[in-house]
Image 1 (tube, helix red, strand yellow):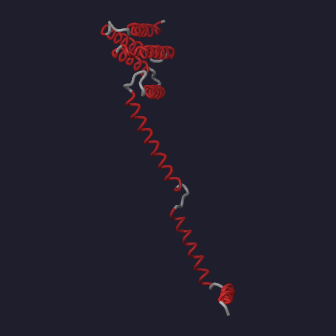
Image 2: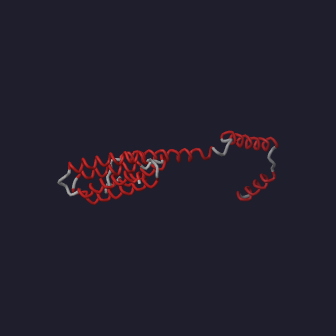
Image 3: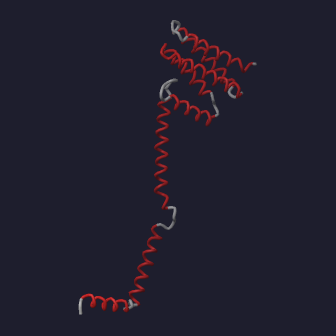
Length: 193
């Protein structure tokens, strides 16, 4: 008998054998134990989502923290500077959340003062700041909210603009600062009409 015939006979004998009852029951018992351990490890399918959810929350905190830091850094930026759009976005969020647009009016006035103090190289940005100041004053005036506060704020702005004008009497930014003074005068008088 050659090896191939011998292997064939062994294969046929093997296929005829039946596993013992103990072997079968033990196999099923082992399988049931493994399934039970898996169910006890994660009884609720929500556990599958905890890791991705924790990662998403972490990312949100990182981005929110980054935006908060960036927004704080942008508060000193002026028109024409890289962080200025972030400053405007954070102002929009604050004014929407609080319902107070005087934040925008105050920031535009501060920008006019700062740009005027910087001098001639920022004239285009100064004109833009004055125009944005006009827009914000008109928005608050038309809203009818904070009228007394607006009048007080605009009076304060008018004094600041006049001080800056006196300090910078020789500069070319006189027309813009005069325009800002007129806006603060007309805005504070709009509540009296």
